[in-house]
Length: 295
Image (cartoon, rainbow, N blue to C red; front, side, top):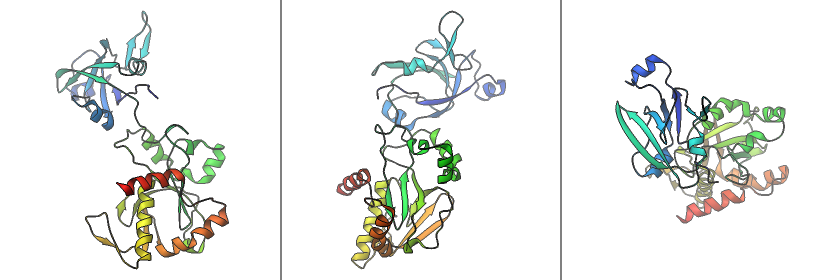
């Protein structure tokens, strides 16, 4: 995909108090409320900042509602000045920053979404089963399968507000994923932990903040290897040693699931056979995990 995307979010400047707060006495423009960290990094120089006032894009004056003249008295949302460009074309922004006029020229590009958007383009179905816990990455296709009733019955409403918030954010770094627990497949290992029809965002495993599905899988492999060797492994937390005998999962809602690593490993075949799952980890996660281990 080569469509240039907006690297910022904006708010109108129609309110006089907001204009006074920003020390802006110009006739038109919008204020920047968010900027894509990846776009700013890729620019390699001066770039937009939060609370900049954009007055012109490519020489066209922005209205206080982010519109520009199109034909005669017809006004149009200014997005097209960026999204309508060919790959490699430069965009010129005239801004006011701390009352000083600045001109910024930047070659924009597609932005990696904070949550993958298109099946087969920036995401494919991925999963990881550990002790009957079914983990998947949060993607837009995950939220569009089946009917509304089926989606609601799956338990996604428990984190609906969180997902809405994440969809509006810019990605901060490449390669990260939001990991969800979307089901608990019953077995002796996870007995006593109820799913209760609610998806949960996984935050940490044994005290380590998780970056991706591959990161989670590699930590699980390290714990399994350590248990099989009868020892302890080195944590990613400042070289501390961590007892790999247990896997402690902490979720965004502060709930916790603790299971023995050896039990998770031993129950894997039973869980997969019982629920008709071909393998405990999908090919995509497996490939990324192997690549990270080589690094």
